[in-house]
Length: 222
Ligand SMILES: [Ca+2]
Picture 1 (cartoon, rainbow, N blue to C red):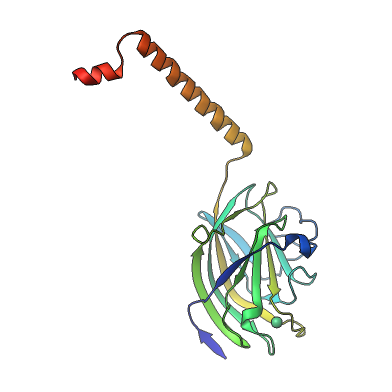
Picture 2 (cartoon, rainbow, N blue to C red):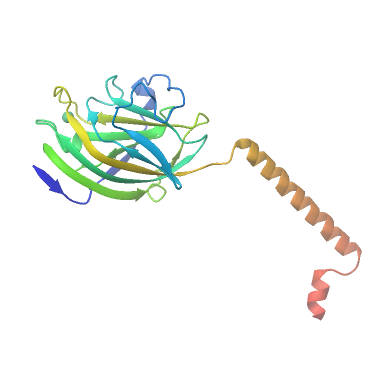
């Protein structure tokens, strides 16, 4: 069965990082080589990243070893602020399209967001989903850590144990909006610059008072 419709989607913040027993994050890679399917690729475009998810299996429950995990280098402390998708998914009987999920988050596993393209589709078969979401509007924008790694795990909400896989991301792309965040050292410099500016203004104000004139006086007589 094939159906095409605008994606129903639902987000949830899953504070499950501690319970998942996540393995140590992979070294910076775009994407990480060991777990990257041969068909997937990621490329930066404008203020974001476009990921080809063609051919990725939807296998097991979150955090289990056979799932596809991508670790994308997006820059230290970068903010992930939007997601767009254009996808063709397939669920193999008895598994459902609503089981096919993706988690996004920093490599630490904290503050993860789960994306379910076919949230309401409780049936097997193939379907197309497209749409976009501004994560800021949903309160779901998040930052990656100092390592700059965005971790994506493709997983099944319910593992039916279908062999070789419950479902498949047949084709399509995910586009992530990414804002760079200044390094902490930059914040320090900005703070110093601000203090210097305020200090200079204070001196100028005192000098103006001492001179008996100043802007206020000039404004009155203008
Ligand atoms: Ca399933």
